[in-house]
Amino acid sequence: QLVESGGGLVQAGGSLRVSCTTSERTLDSYSMAWFRQAPGKEREFVARITWSGDSTYYADSVKGRFTISRDNAKNTAYLQMNSLKPEDTAVYYCAVDLVRYRSGDSRGVAGYYYWGQGTQVTVSS
Image (cartoon, rainbow, N blue to C red; front, top):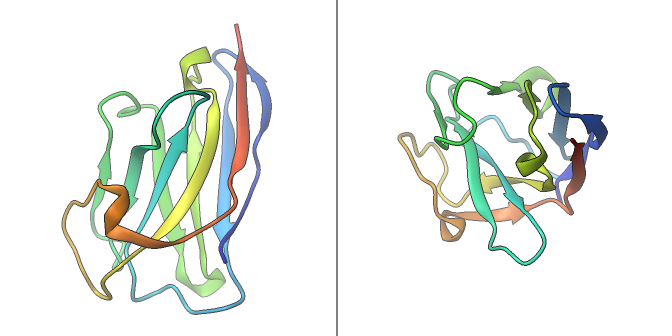
């Protein structure tokens, strides 16, 4: 299981960085993504980074504010969130691509199979 950390309560306009790692497997040959789920809403795609780290993809709602990255030496993925808005409030989940060495864009939940338990991010107005 992936383990997310770094969530918390922040004021609008503030920043947070969430992290995702696991001791159960090596992640460097898999693309990874962040999703989020607000109360009463479906889980939605936030960002993706390919296994090589060469390409990143973002939801329109976070583009220019969030940055996904990875450190394969630490077996960890990150999501740096700046200029946070109250509508960013959600539980944030990281996930591993279903297919090893798959590049390109993939935004559906079904394309990922290894999930964390989530970390709560709350943005106050």
